[in-house]
Length: 194
Image (cartoon, rainbow, N blue to C red; front, side):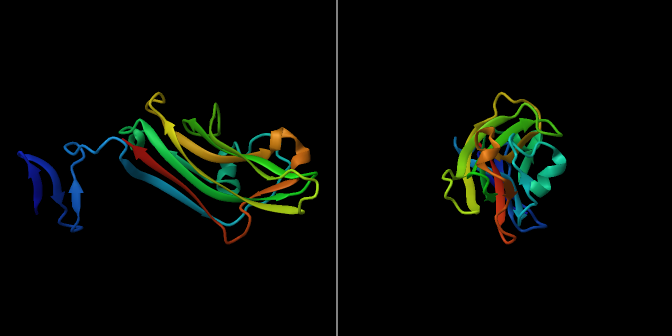
C-alpha cells in the first residue's frame, strides 16, 4: 500500500483491493468552483398521455417514474456543497388542441414524498403557438442550472421535470407525453460545487 503525503499529511492512499488511488477529502482542498459528481438518473422511452394538464404535472411520487424524470440528493450527499449544478435533457410529444404549446420546468422541493412548496429553477415555453401547427409536436427540453442550496439545511433535495398547458390554459395543448418516442433517452445529473 502506498500513500501520498505532503509535510507529513496524507493526501491520498492506494486502495489495495481496487488498485486505485483514494483521495483523503479531509486533507485535500479543491479549488473554488470545482465540481464533484453526485448522481445521475437515466430513463428510456415515452409515457402515457396526460390530458390537458392545466397545472404543473406530475406532483405525486407515484407518477414520477412513468410520467417524468427526477433525482433526489440526500443531506449527506449535498452537505459538503453550497451549490449544486443540475443538468437535464428530455423530450415531449404535444398533441394539438388549438395549439401545441406547453410550459416545462425543473422544480426543486425538499423532504420526502409528493411535490410541495416547490421552487422553479428552470422554465421554458415549448411547442407551436400557431393554429397551423402539426397535429403532434415533438420538442426537447434541456438546460443546466446552478442552484444555491446554502439556506436549505440538512434535508433531502429533489428535482423533477414538470409540464402543463401553456399559461394554464387547455386550448394550448391536448395530450402531453413525457418522451417523444420509445427510443428516447432522458437524463438528469447532479454535481456538487465547492
